[in-house]
Amino acid sequence: MFKRIALLGLIISSTGGLAAPPKQPNKMVAWDIHRVLCTTPKRHGYQCRPQESTFELVKELHAKGVKQVILSNISDKSFGKLSRCYPRHFKYFDIGGSLTGAKGIFTRKPHRKYYKKFLQKNHNVHPRDIIFFDDKLENINGARKICIDGQIFRSATQARTILNRKGLL
Image (cartoon, rainbow, N blue to C red; front, side):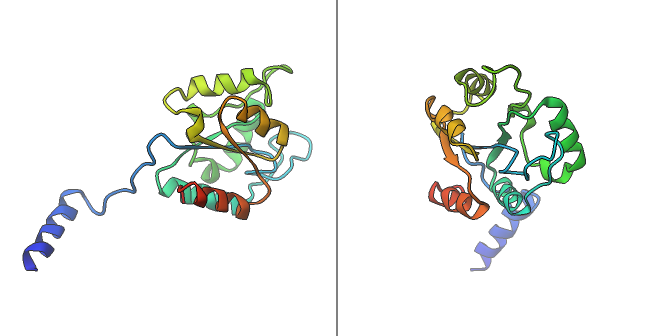
């Protein structure tokens, strides 16, 4: 018994403490911004507030090692302002894998071209391993056409149920 405890102590001390949570291999959650992560904007895309209940989910997923990205039609300029206003909220996202700044009518959600651009940025993740939350059915259907697991977002509680069912929480 003493040897087991000593061995466990040795393992913990050699790793610098308890091990970090295991990463979810090749799983990703993509979030839309307006009416999902944040409230409806007033006039400009950055004029919204974080929905704290949704960001609690974001924090939990981050703690479990799940990669998270933004997939939104918000302009790059507006997203920059929004993320500077709420740096504590947006620190959980892989910005390099995120896609914002849609330009033109056929280069934004729900068009195939936009999702293809997103998949090119995240070529190491299979589309079926991406869970995408959006509040608009046409965006969900567009994502599903290229095998992204699109889920309509109604509330953080509903999203939690989906994420639990998929084994991410």
